[in-house]
Length: 230
Ligand code: ATP
Image 1: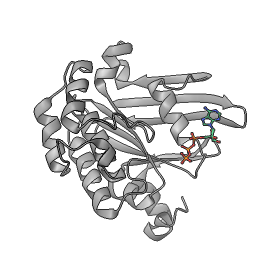
Image 2: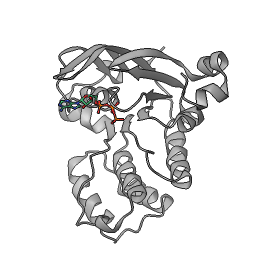
Image 3: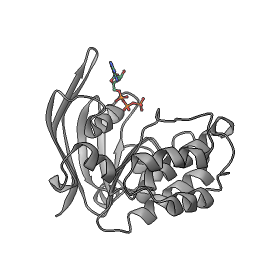
Image 4: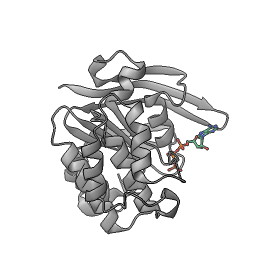
């Protein structure tokens, strides 16, 4: 199995919380849903993977070790954190101009096609956007430099079903490429049921289970899974 992301024995201690021995593996061409209650450690896990939080111990292997870290790695990752937005006084076109300078593979045509697909006005300031529009813009920006691995923290949280559907469809298109992968955290089990291939369930900083979604559904049934009993 070719993996695009492997997390092994990841540990991170804060004063009142510990992420303990978190391990999971994301095969290429698949979507991993990271699920857990508030404070379970989902954001900390994603931040430790991208290096935004310094881990105490553990190994992270990104893109099968096929990278040299630093700025080369940045080119291959698309990241959307829930606190990542950004440039409120600018419009999407102005934001694109700034991001173009940061990414070797920035693709303006692709960026604009996502803006169109998401029905985002190109010349309206972000401060006038709804939270759903901001999230869609962050996703368009994260995809426009042709990343191989997409990491997203609660990308559909608090959004209405139509916007959630638009976002999930974009993820499903992205993952059509067998070299791609997506790790996303969510507490919306219905979204994960729709798109995830694998589920990692965190509870109080520990992995309770990490396995294929279909095996989980078979074991627990759709109804119980949808109620979050997994
Ligand atoms: P949520 O769904 O609420 O975002 P989460 O599963 O993403 O939750 P984390 O944000 O990773 O959880 O937080 C896990 C725990 O770590 C929480 O108890 C949080 O208060 C704590 N924590 C996170 N960041 C820090 C920090 N910088 N300093 C101290 N404690 C922190």
